[in-house]
Length: 165
Image: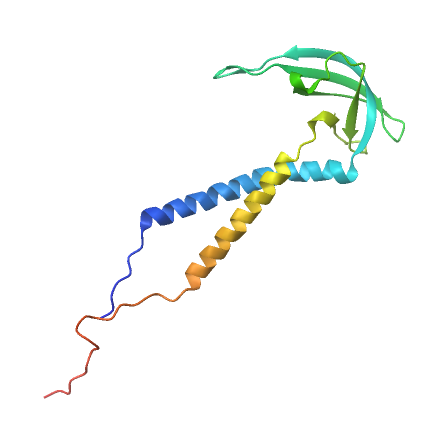
C-alpha cells in the first residue's frame, strides 16, 4: 500500500496569493516602465514658458493630500508647432516661482508631454523586482510540479502475491 503525501493547503494558498500579487504589480509597474522607456527613447526636452502656476490639495478619505504645484506651460516642439499642456509636481520639487520649466514631450500630433521633474526610476525598478519575483516563483512552481512524488513504503514490507489455494 502506498503512503499518502499530504499538501499544506494553507501554505500553497499563500504562495499562490504572493504570486498573483506579484503578477498584478508586474503588470501595473510594466505600464509605468513602458511610459518611462517611451520618454527615454523617443522623448525630447525643451524649456517651456510657464503660463500659470498654482498650489492645491486633493481631498482624500484620510484628509487633504500634501500640497501640489500645478503648472500650465507652453512650448514649441521640433516641428515648430506650439503646444500647451499642464502637469503637477510636489511643492518640494523647487519649481515655485519660475518663469520657465524643463519639459519632456513625445513628438507627433498625439504626443504627450510632462514636466521633466516627474522623471522616475521607481516604476522600472519595481518592474524589474516583480519580473525577478515572478520568474523565480514560476521556476519554483515548475520544479515542484515536475518533482517526483515521494512515496512511503508500508511498515509491513513489500506486498507479496500469494498463489490461490
